[in-house]
Length: 230
Image (cartoon, rainbow, N blue to C red; front, side, top):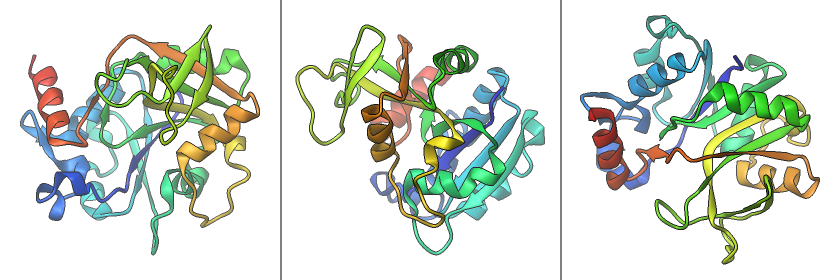
């Protein structure tokens, strides 16, 4: 199974005051830090190697997760450093720990999609990048993907259209080559990278009918907790 880089460096301002003293990954959900649930989910999907891309209070994440062995996972850490690098910039910095191909996952996402199936579609596509998408219809968040006939036609979080019925599900797969245009230490956004590879017709897609769960907002925490407790 491909390694997973977890983007867990954000400030989580929408969850303050909870996140004034702890990072979002350690917010309690269903009686445990969220990262505990995320690690168990990844292990159940056959993931054996995780790179935590961290910044804000990242040392607390490292102290909690350690080497990952209690989850059957090998965990390592990549720190942004003196400045926030953006998601794509942070992945670029973590690249020496990731190898030639890897999953990308947000640190506040709980995704029940079968990772192995997503990886298979990625390799079968022959493309350097894949985005998972979900037919959202504006239900759980604002839809931002136009998807038809198995292909992503448009992706934009700022300039949305009526044809955008799907949403970026939060799980990506990339070859390292997709990040070749980003310099070391450069601030770069993952949304922009997705748009760049889409323009070059290098973005594959995997559509899932499994709704996503997230802890980025108090409402998201309530939904995720209810799901985990069920």
